[in-house]
Amino acid sequence: MAVAYFPCIQSARVTPRVSCFFSVGNYSRSHYKRRCCLVLASAKKLEDNFGLESKVETLLDSIKWDEKGLAVAIAQNVDTGAILMQGFVNRDALATTISSRKATFYSRSRSTLWTKGETSNNFINVHDIFLDCDHDSIIYLGKPDGPTCHTGSETCYYTSVTDLLDDQQAEENKLALTTLYSLESTISQRKAELAAPQNGKPSWTKRLLLDKNLLCSKIREEADELCRTLEENENKSRTASEMGDVLYHALVLLALKDVKTEDVLEVLRQRFSQSGIEEKKSRKSHS
Amino acid sequence: MAVAYFPCIQSARVTPRVSCFFSVGNYSRSHYKRRCCLVLASAKKLEDNFGLESKVETLLDSIKWDEKGLAVAIAQNVDTGAILMQGFVNRDALATTISSRKATFYSRSRSTLWTKGETSNNFINVHDIFLDCDHDSIIYLGKPDGPTCHTGSETCYYTSVTDLLDDQQAEENKLALTTLYSLESTISQRKAELAAPQNGKPSWTKRLLLDKNLLCSKIREEADELCRTLEENENKSRTASEMGDVLYHALVLLALKDVKTEDVLEVLRQRFSQSGIEEKKSRKSHS
Image (cartoon, rainbow over all chains, first blue to last red; front, side, top):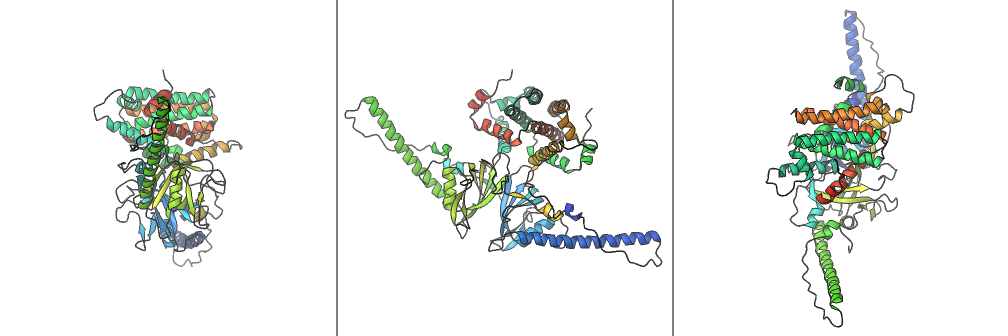
């Protein structure tokens, strides 16, 4: 495991205890200084790596591995929260994920480590790892490079039990979507349905999709109503309801522009993972 | 398992094959009709239940149980996407969850079924269940009644590996938050920091929190800019960026009003799980 760990960890604040005891000899003062600094830096890096390896070992020791030396690992999309897949990890698989930042598992059927994406290139880039209260279940919180499931589906969870029990001919590929993405998916379906001839009065969503002026006037109106819940000191449920209206209408606009909610969240994540100063600098100036 | 299944499943379209062959005797025609209908209804219910039980059995047969008869079950918040906890299920635990709609697991240490919340009352109300592509991993997509972890934490995943490796004194209780909730949490922290004396220039978030007029003018401005990306046919990345601005500023308003993003999503879920007609009726009329 002599590999680079998380960049944030590489900056571990370990004071180097190695002093620069080279004799100066023929070297100029600046050359000496430069070389001395390089040696110090390498020594510090070695010591940091050593300290880090020892921390990783302590962490691995703290996991409650089952009788086969395994724990459950769940890969979750850092932006959408979608559960991408679930596998098992042993000590080596978790250590490899910590060092490579690519979600790595232990295959129980093949008795080998495998990194998701090693054949498909659809890696899951791990941003952080979380342990549960019992230290026997792990979340890989990360960003997938592409669909996670070997079937080409975005996640492995596309079979709804309700659908299966309600109707034998239930459609497959109904992803386990949480509220925001379920709504996004519904709006997307309405947009797709517009291609077919319309019977009867169109739904509100379809009317918005067909009429940009109506949609934009609603977005401005709902944003105004949201503000007024603060300005006029309205109750919390009114704020939640108005924010719901803003979100819904804005999602219709995103659908029209073919922009995914996930893309918006990625923008926000990148913006807010910068330091305050960087964020301020990069923020466009509004007059 | 002679219990109520999902309401949507109870309406299973099974045609009753039992005819009403009672003799009329002394009963009035209306009494006869009423009784006949009751018998028909009971017969239909029995047959529906029988059909459903058989479907549940088929479903349970389709799960790839491990050598101990277990599969992994992950409970996920239907609104926020937060992974609440992970446990194992056997055949009975999954059948119980299907019938009771309360997340139920099999305790490997106590060798018994247990329903999350049976002692704490913090049940997880299951809205749907999803199987993965291999049928050996399950998502309980549901709404928790309260904190899921026995420690009182909202979820069981509050130990960040990055924190552990970066600094031995890393704070615990840093939940595994996805982008939207991570941003919400940061804004919440900024709001809490306002109670302490402020040194130097406040951050943009703090300025917004301190100045309702500034905040509301920004929300209206960002909503307008989002609309203009549609009206003026700007590119997709511009739309994503402006939507990010809308979301961020709206989250600041929610923080000021002590409204959680989860509450907003619950409003949206309830609104969109109604039929189109109900939704239209309940939608407030905007002039």
